[in-house]
Every structure is written in structure tokens, then in C-alpha cells.
Image (cartoon, rainbow, N blue to C red; front, side, top):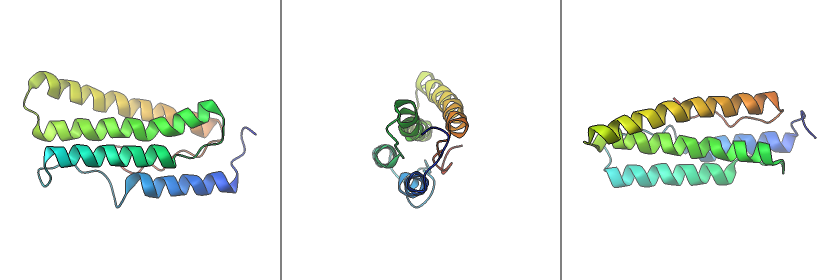
Length: 125
């Protein structure tokens, strides 16, 4: 049923918000090594994708899983900006961050227009 958000779906969305973002936003800093940052970004992404609210409608389910996937790419790019030295890759990482943020916004808008509960903003920037 399009356009109606069931209480179960809403609860799943809240569960997703908690599990996808752990104790808070992903923070890329030198307080952690590069490998640890990348592992954390991947773990958060996979947890978010697994917990994404699904209703069996391909468009909806694709979108709810792609949001944490894109956020994972942002988090990994931010880790590179902390530790990476190559100017070309740093520029690529900046482009990834900008494009993935834009695409997350498009997906959130799509979900809001189609009756899906968008995942909580969490650490989107």
C-alpha cells in the first residue's frame, strides 16, 4: 500500500536510525588510525543497510538501503582526507562527499514523497 506508513515500518525506521549510526556520528580524525576508520565506516554502512526499513517494494527498499551505503562512501572519503596525501585522490574524495550528499538528499526526498519513512539524518553532513 503506497502512501501509508505502518506503525511497524515506522518502528523499523527508528530502529534503523539507532543501529545505523551507533553512538553518534562518524568522526574521521587522527584519534584513530586509517584502517580503524575504514573498518568503522564499513561496519556502520553494513549495519545500516541490514537495518534499513523494507516493505517489499523494490524502489523503496533500494532507496532505504542506498542511503547508508552512500553515507559509508562519505565516511570512507573523509577518512582519506584525514590521512591521504595524493592530491588527485583527495580531490576525488571531495567529489565523492559532495555527490553522495546530494544523492542522499534526492533519496530522502523521494522517500518522503512516496510514503516511506526516511532513515534518520544521523551523520549526514
